[in-house]
Length: 310
Image (tube, rainbow, N blue to C red; front, side, top):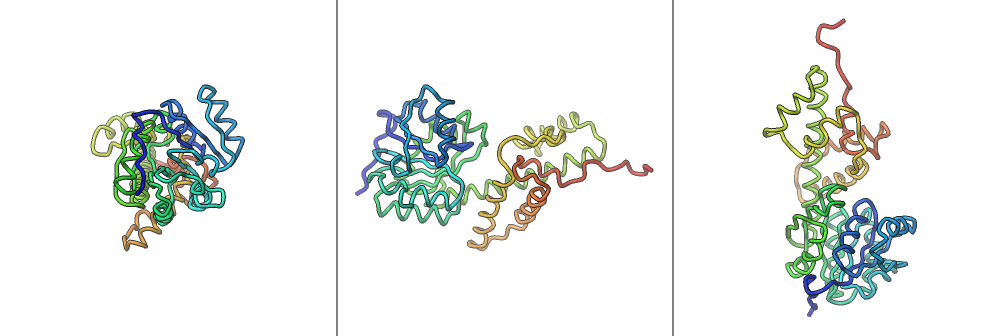
């Protein structure tokens, strides 16, 4: 029978964090600040060194491989790039599952396919490891402030073991369903986000083309049913052509691709998601792939002449 991980409230536990990117670096910091015995690993040593320099008081153990990171850990957390990256650091010859103990917890924050999440869960079951696919939302600022929202897939036992660990950097933690469900919920999140950004981009350009006072327009519409996080934070920056706020169009297209593929698997129709994905592709073709998703407005004309103007 799988052993239960002791509750995080009893004492600090040994947590290994793999992947010190934009989101992972902050999450690892919160775990160290929460008092856990932290081990870190990143495939690029320069990023590890940068993390150590930025967090001088935490003194984590630095591993040379995912397998070394998982050795002696109560929980292993990953936040990497895509399906292939995740499979390598978890299931590969030097992967975390080579050494993670029976009864240990594996938590993945990468946005990946439901297929790889289910595959890892099956491998974990065979090794008596509790697996949770736990993609996050809340942007880089949410990771930095420890206020992320996390949607979790996995067994009730796995979720119960993971939840106390996740409180170090999350404000909302929801058990969505079985393995893979967390990833599908994240796809739904990205579909909503893409639709909101597309609508906001058109609204901003429309207001500019009509020569409205944008400050007054924002004041008028942001207090009603059209209000959203995107409107509050991106209405004015879109209007000023400022697009350096974190989550890149390249990554959004990866996420929408996952959603479109999964829609085919479950027989769902997602025509708006497909259309907006192509809009993002237009901005990529303009050289904006690394810009924030609000750069979607770039594909729309900056300003039209007044009606009747010569």
